[in-house]
Amino acid sequence: MGNGACNSLFDPSYAPGGEHVAFWWPFAPYSVDGSPQEWERNRSEYAQRVLDYWRVYASISKATTCSGPTLFTPLDVEKLNANMRQGAVRVEAYVPNQLGINRPHPLMPGSRTPVEGLYLCGSSSGNGGGINGAPGYIAANAIVADLKLKRPWKPVPAPEWKH
Image (cartoon, rainbow, N blue to C red; front, side, top):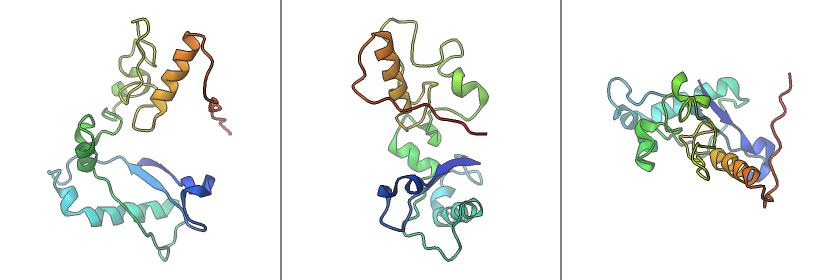
């Protein structure tokens, strides 16, 4: 299980003509076979397994060359950001009581807090989480709405869910 996208499919500027850039973030344990160091010992094998699995769902043939596959393991994530303990890119465990509206607390989801003028906008907030910038964008929209300010940016339209 994981999430991913092929950004260049929708915005060709991500890659040279006729090529694509994609990512997939599978959910992965911190320790493999009892040790987090197994990630490093078997990095290329795990990268190939992820790529092979990606090919099941993406239209990538075995003959397609992947010129720059990169595997960021939970150890890599933790090394790059000390707040992301054990590779938790959303600064949480993927369990119901730490997801979505339960963050940072079930009685206080979103950007606004009980303290006037204090807003949450980090990875540990319940409004998008992770390292994608969404929490800051959502908090900024809450701030301009609360203070009745003019947005100096063009709002991103809400997603349209098609059935």
